[in-house]
Length: 582
Image 1 (tube, rainbow, N blue to C red):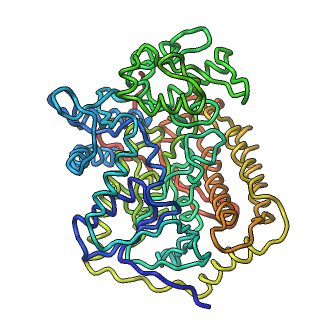
Image 2: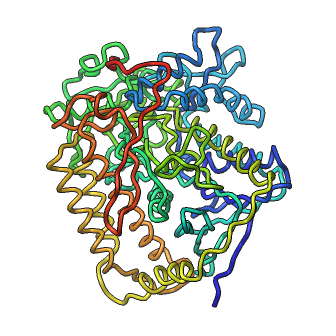
């Protein structure tokens, strides 16, 4: 029976801030001239973007001392000079308009006493430019964008449709395969343009701030389709994941004046970043915390055995906590029975963000390994890597990037359609049959084998052990060997559930394959990069090496179980690399 097809002018894969912003831009610019489909593996408003807490960076008050140049410099320095500098300039110049648009569309930004939009300090920023809505910024941005989208016609949402693969043949985009969880059938989505906005891969690690649904789907699908990934070895560890469950405690808690304390009661950041203290960039703070723990100045959580540091907010006061950090207080009370107004919160670094992603340029256009545009394909948000974050992202630049790349990709994809883009040819019959065989025969029909959840848990433990804050060749080689073993074992896994309707076992199996594909790229890139830069810190190569490694890693699939790595230069146009001091 031939696979059923669904056609739109533009497909948006993912419904977080980036995906919704792309949809809004298409509708506000082109109205019903461009037909849009939004595909989400979740109910649309449950995308992980709702968990973003602290704020969104933008230059709003140049008259008070902020500037595009200062935001660009902070971002490039924070990136450990791996950011492409023209992309950063383009990014910072577009952000103020995004803040004001969201304001006009109804987002309840916190206000100064005079009614103007408020901003607070954030790590690595030399000016308080974190625009915030209490500590629920992502939630409010999602709500605002969705409410705006509801004003328009000519778009359709596909909630709980799980994309399995991008159909690419001869390096050309042909469509997208997706399972409808309601009927268990495989469909082929066809479109003139595709925007990939699938988010990151935080569930690679065993201690993470990310939801269970963040499984590197976009990276893995792009990798399997022969597209290029960039700089995936750079994975950010947020300093303050709640112990023992990893829930994000926003950097805004330190932006409001929170202290980090070791078991001697010391504010130890004065040793590592005397000028910025707790508001140094995340890679610096995470390494400092982990050093304190390794040298015996941390605490140990009795039930889980996890080591941690204390985040002290008591001096901020109950009223200010309730105004600025209500979710932090609620999370701590609800999940661990600690009221931050009365006692410190136990925290430790948690996997938080993928600086790398699908190779893209400063206009969010997806690029192949040679830097050529993959016609009709754009990437937005954390799924892409236009090299704004480099080796280390500054807090509040992520939601900002989602807004900017969502806007650009939506505008350009709609323009591409209206300028006469044709619907690509159908994928070959062999390609369609291969997809059906992979899902229904190779995964669903197996009657025995190994539990996919065992494989998934072992992968996450391996990544947490061998590719955490401090890395070295010996541990990473062990980790890579384990990843390759787990990839072989995936051939023997089977879902317990054999039904077609809402088969979450089957979805978990595909997600596990996605995690393994992403892990392979992360491991290969990390082993090859023989230096320490930003979030990639190697004990055996503890110095940054600009002479040999001021370049981006480009990864493409090579055979079934290997990765081919090439490199492209970093775009340095304004500031040459210098030593980072905070």
